[in-house]
Image (cartoon, rainbow, N blue to C red; front, side):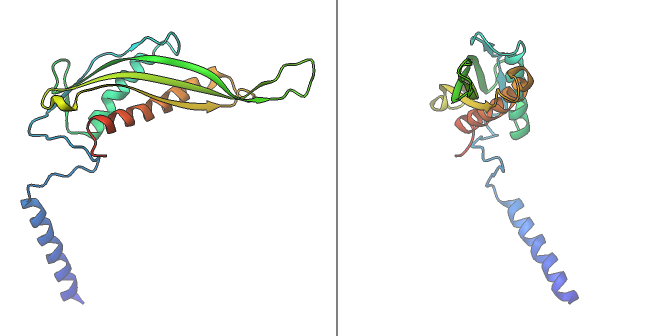
Length: 179
C-alpha cells in the first residue's frame, strides 16, 4: 500500500515537472493575450450620453471594467498609453413595458406587467500590438422587473450592476478571450 502511495506522489511530481518545462501558456480565463508583448491596459472614463440613469453610472461602469480586467488578466492598469486601450460612452438607457396586465376595472387603464431596463455601451478597443483586433462596437443587455411589486428606484442599482456585469463579460470575450 505504501509503495502505491509513493508511486502516485512520484508520478504527480513528474507530471508537475513536465508541465513546468513546457512553453505552452494557458489561462483559465481563456484569454488570447500574449503577455510577452502585452503588459498594460488603459481605460478612459466612459461618458453617459444616454440622458438617463443614476448620476454615477458612468463612473460605476468605468471602475467595473477596470476591476474585471485586473481580476481576469495579468495586465497592469496604467493611466495612459496602455498596450490595450478602452474608451466609449453609455449611449442608451431605456425603460420599455414588456407585457400588459389588465386592471379588471373599466375605470383604470391596463398596466405593464413587466418593465425592461436596457443599457447599451459603445466601446472603442485599440490593441497597439495587433491592430487587426481593434474594434468599435455597441454592447447591450437588459433586465426585467415587475413594477407591480417594486419601483425602479428600489431595484435600479441592482439592475444596472447586473447589466454592466453582462456587458463587461461580452466586452472581455470580444477583446481578449479565446471564444
